Length: 236
Image 1 (cartoon, one colour):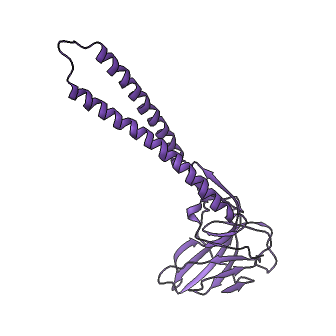
Image 2 (cartoon, rainbow, N blue to C red; image 1 turned 135 degrees about the vertical axis):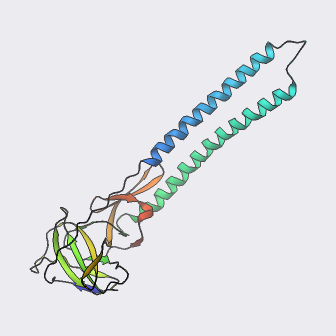
Image 3 (cartoon, helix red, strand yellow; image 1 turned 45 degrees about the vertical axis):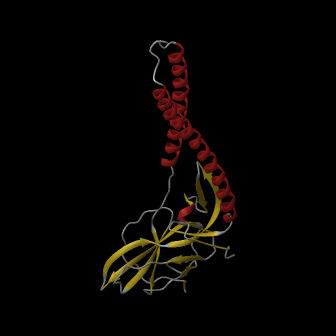
């Protein structure tokens, strides 16, 4: 692990983007499932009424074949069972979602390993760099909340962990802000890739959003809990 304090001269860098997650598809699917269940239940009740009327008004000299009755009843009974099964599964899903939320709530206050910006207020930040295949040199670029480059460091290809102490180009301490970290990989001076690095960010909130566990990080970023690649106790 290497700790960075002051950067070498600047180089031109490619533009980068920050990460923001949204969860909407699951809400639409859940709403559609409830509507389908209501329609199925209504259709079954309508069928029973129609069947009763049919029996009451059939020609006693030419009654409907009992086998046909049995087939119709079996078909709609299957539909009713499916409706009840769907209701049971939704209830089970809700229960499991509550259990998952209870488990994930233990993450609050811990640091999660994510590919996202991170809030900085003076504490050193651990960065997990990734390098392009075939790279013979690399630099870590630090950008503020406005996307402006504020620092650049040469790093050794293969270095697994970098500690950023929050220093500006002149070695002074950077102000509190939200920063993102990008690794530019080079081969013989040519840029191969520019990728956002994983960092450890404090988890401030966990909630259940229609069965999806959403995590809010210290910088306000929200993401699916499944995107948390690792957890650790706060470093201080």
